[in-house]
Length: 156
Image (cartoon, rainbow, N blue to C red; front, side, top):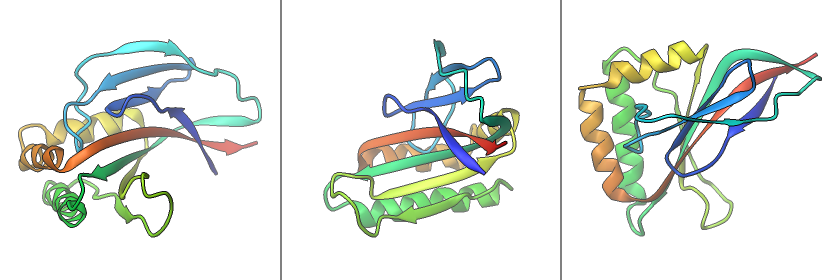
């Protein structure tokens, strides 16, 4: 199994790839949430003949804390995962940088979804919950935030 980058663009971009090869981007208002607020389309590389498309998606959020906020960013991300667990949602997993460039992300959260519909249902389940408060707080701790959505593909 391999992952193929669907889109990586502005720091608050959520992308989803459809069988047509079109990438639909939606801006997200908070660094922990992927609530769609607007959409635009652009063409993507529609031809990967050696790969077969899967409907599964992997979402990776990366966090760039303000100086001195690393511990609070980690604690807040873990709190967000705990809120997800209380809501009966998957918690994904949190990864903390061990080495790499100092200007790289400090944390990554990733989760896998079996389909775009499952991802959308997950995001909808967060609406109006304590997760929004946690997300707003996270936004005060960050210099930057990024989200990349990957489509799972398999070699033929």
